[in-house]
Amino acid sequence: AQTVTQSQPEMSVQEAETVTLSCTYDTSENNYYLFWYKQPPSRQMILVIRQEAYKQQNATENRFSVNFQKAAKSFSLKISDSQLGDTAMYFCAFMKHAGNTPLVFGKGTRLSVIA
Amino acid sequence: DTGVSQNPRHKITKRGQNVTFRCDPISEHNRLYWYRQTLGQGPEFLTYFQNEAQLEKSRLLSDRFSAERPKGSFSTLEIQRTEQGDSAMYLCASSLWGSGANVLTFGAGSRLTVL
Figure (cartoon, rainbow over the protein chains, first blue to last red):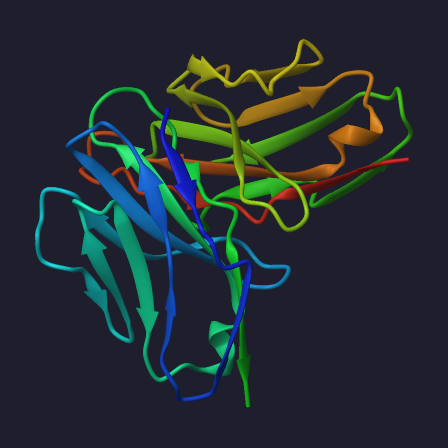
């Protein structure tokens, strides 16, 4: 079974600074997808960024980028120019590429952006 | 399309009562997922459907839980004889399987409190 580990329960960052959230996963699969989801306080979960394992290039979405290290099974999220609206729970998630498998989540990192 | 809709948003019930949650997915999405999230934790997979077929159920889904998606559109999650341990946020998500990364879109959740 796949597992996703987020080792930082809480983090904080000053507004406009850069922060990196860590995620590691365990799988024997070669093809899979990785995701970062954001869950603001009392609001629904939204997709931040996704990465396909067969792509070597790291995904980027505006101020959000990932550092995907397939051999190390590491998938960190970097948030640049942090904004107050980035305050949220961030969840790393894994899905196998093929087959009928659900999305598996880590326990999350609570990020606070401080003015 | 207004996204994934869940009702009710909040439900307070007494132990032993039955509760039912409804999820209306994005109309063109063929997959529908149910997750449970307790405070400070990541979502845990419960079950999912492709069209009207229930393809997988987690061991978390005890005999008191049942989910349906009768016409391949909306879904219901029923919990019978509720227990205090059932208190959680129940999240619904939908996706278009076969569209590549199979990105899940989440609803706002239904929060259950069992007294």
